[in-house]
Image 1 (spheres, rainbow, N blue to C red):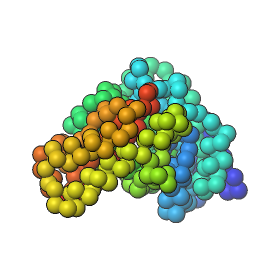
Image 2: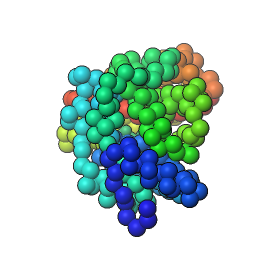
Image 3: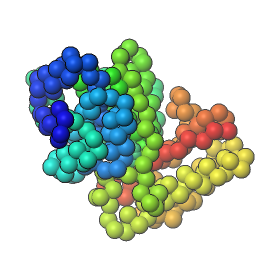
Image 4: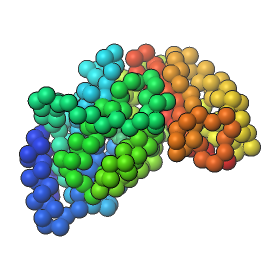
Amino acid sequence: MSGGVTCLSTIVEVRAALDEARARGARVGLVPTMGALHEGHCSLIRAARAENDVVVVSIFVNPTQFGPTEDFTKYPRDIGADVRVVDEAGGDLVFNPSAEEMYAGDHSTWVDVQGLTDGLCGRSRPGHFRGVCTVVTKLLAICQPERAYFGEKDAQQLAVIQRMARDLNTRTKIVACPIVREADGLAMSSRNIRLSPESRTQAPALNRALRVAQTLVAAGERRSSVVDKAIRATLAEAPLGEIDYVEIVGAENLTPVETIVGTCLIALAVRFGDVRLIDNTRVTA
Ligand code: AMP
């Protein structure tokens, strides 16, 4: 599995390849993605490369985590380009299954993390995390990695997966990786390429708003209402963006706080047409 990327699309093949690697004593690292890979994904692949002997990158636009009115069909797909990116970032194996392969037969088992999924993206995207947790559980069962890598860009997803792994006594260690941004501060996302030029110009307001919040908290502001107002004022500099949510929540339980104490997560989601962008930061008071 050296000298180029092996591309596999069936569960049987991936299992056989990884069983063979493990039999040689190799440690397996998994990076689950939906493709349209960018530097954010590459940072996860490189982190996996540094800590494991075999790096598997799954590329699967998971239909069960998209709502009926969401962008499943418009989600960018370019497997040829993705395989080259995986190769350059140091991945060994791409697992690119079809939806039929992943959800064969009368699929009827779902993994649902309660509580943590109530707010933030869970509120705007009912069923989203059920789809995410189910597919991640399946990928962990298929690949049985020593470690699996997730980005802090999707902070709620990371918290939900960490909880799921803890609750289900999963052997795999969940590794968190920092957010990678464009030069103008916009968090990298596969969806960024779908922004109109005008929206792309306005989208860095998300990160600017988070930095305004950080500055306020660093200066001693503790009232969530005041920080929330400042965030919304900065987001107003992006008139094409429609706020989905701005929330200040406890970093552990993800429930809204009135007063910022300890470590809190400030998270937001903004729609530019049918492109929904998310970003977040942690603050400690
Ligand atoms: P996706 O392909 O959007 O499902 O993302 C796959 C993984 O890459 C998830 O764990 C994301 O959190 C992570 N990821 C996506 N964008 C970034 C980014 N800008 N920085 C760090 N990680 C990211």
